[in-house]
Structure formats: structure tokens, C-alpha cells
Image (cartoon, rainbow, N blue to C red; front, top):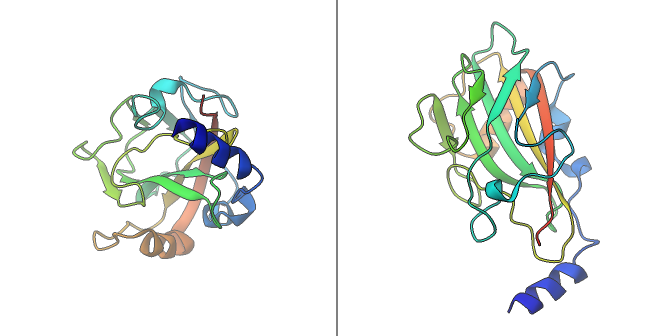
Length: 183
């Protein structure tokens, strides 16, 4: 079965959504938030510990940021796979964060963590780490951190509803890119 998946991944290698199809990239104003992780630098490989279920331990990496505007009403963290073989990049994780936070500890991107509220993605709630198709090659995972001028209402529970809020209220953004290639 693994050999078949790898052959499929190799066949699909040229098929990628691409960053140019990301609705998030189009929303991002000039980057004023500096987003980083002590586990990988911008553009570098994400450690296997942070890869998704069945590939790694699915433990969220620690994230730290500076440069959030003082008047931010909310922060929104979205992790997106630009290279998935679909028409648009795939959102792995979507979380609304308390604007007073300046970091997320390793493993804390999970439901029940104070100051975080998750929206459901195609992969569920909470952190869903990198898990590209075997043989598909290197994938780029963009960690977007948006600051908004308005709170994200509790009744916003879908990515489409979130996109409307972001479109109307994003004031700052930071992006950290990590890569992952399935062994």
C-alpha cells in the first residue's frame, strides 16, 4: 500500500495549489508582525516531531511573535499547505487567539488551551501537522498570524465566515514558512 501511495504522490508531484491561489496571501497587508519558532527558521524544514499523525508526533511547534499593533482586538493563526494537489491550499489549523498573547508553547495548539479558540478545518480541530502524500516532494507550510481591528465573533465557526472577518479587519500580518517532505 505504501508503494502505491508513493507512486500516486510521484504522479501528482506537478499538481500543486500554489501560494498564488491562497486567499490568505491576498489578505496580508505589509508584514509588521515578526513570527518565529525556535524549532525551525523561515524557509527551513519542520522537524518530524511536528509532522502530522502517522508521520510524526503531531506536536505543535512553539511560536513567538512581536510587532502586534496595540489596538489589536484578536489574533488569528492559520497554518496552510501551499503544495497540496488541490485547487487551493489546504488549511491545516485555524485558531483565534487572545490578542495579549505573545507566544504559544510547544504542544499547546490543542482544544482546551486558555486563550485559544479553534475553527474546524477539513482535518478537524486543533493542530494538524505536515502530512504530505508520500513521494509528492517538499511542501511549504505557511504559518500566518493576523491581527484584527475587530474581535472574531463566537458565531464565526467556518473558514468562510472567518475570511469575511479577516477581509474587513486585518491590520497586520506575520508569516513563517516551514517545509516538510515525507520520508
